[in-house]
Length: 73
Image (cartoon, rainbow, N blue to C red):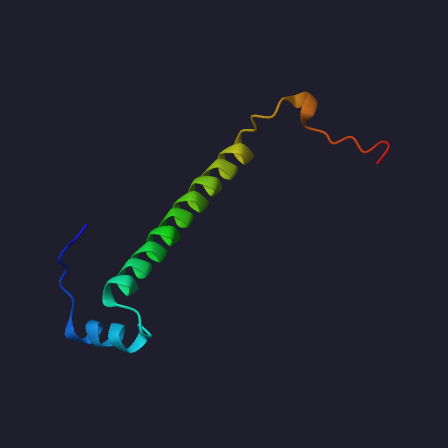
């Protein structure tokens, strides 16, 4: 897909400096992909934290499974 974005001259200069021989499109694609991966990881971490906090306040674990048996370990 092709798209048009507006960037400041300063940002374009930075991209040219750090692109290390890759095309602008490849640099942008990689940067966007990394950002999306970071956002997905952050969303998952927040969901896990919320789940852990909910479990801590009201355990869904059956009482018979609450204690750890260590006999024979």
